[in-house]
Image (cartoon, rainbow, N blue to C red):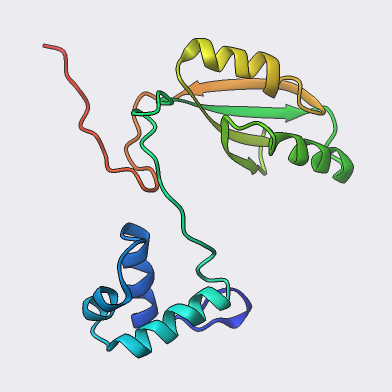
Amino acid sequence: MGEKGTEVDRFDRKILDILTVEGRISVTALARRIGLSKSPTQARLKRLEDSGVIRGYRALYDPIRLNRDHVAFVEVKLTDTREAALAAFNAAVMQVSEVEQCHLIAGAFDYLLKVRTAGMTGYRAVLAEKISTLPHVASTSTYVAMQAVKEEGLKPVAPTTDR
């Protein structure tokens, strides 16, 4: 069941699974793949969109081709965790284009950020000039990803081995 009681049956699940990988598939091809005719497939697709189960469509880019293959995960601790401070941080972090994801965490720190840059030098600049200056930031800890084993929209790349 989706949010607000949206029923999702096996045909809807097939639609979602296919669209997750092939967002530009035609309705005719989608209908063929799930085993329904075009009209009911189109109706199901519209219902999934109207109900908010499908929130939108987007292009996925290859970060390596765009020289943005350096990924760092950053733990952020705030000096203040009252609602106004969280709201200020949330609004400000939305303006940092290098931050791909930002999650409020229940744990030893307050936020976990996924930051994508061209390299370590670029990351250091983003950390110093953007992330560390966000409202209420007390401290950060950085973890650099060596390889994306599973990442939304990206096919895994076999690691290179030096022999």
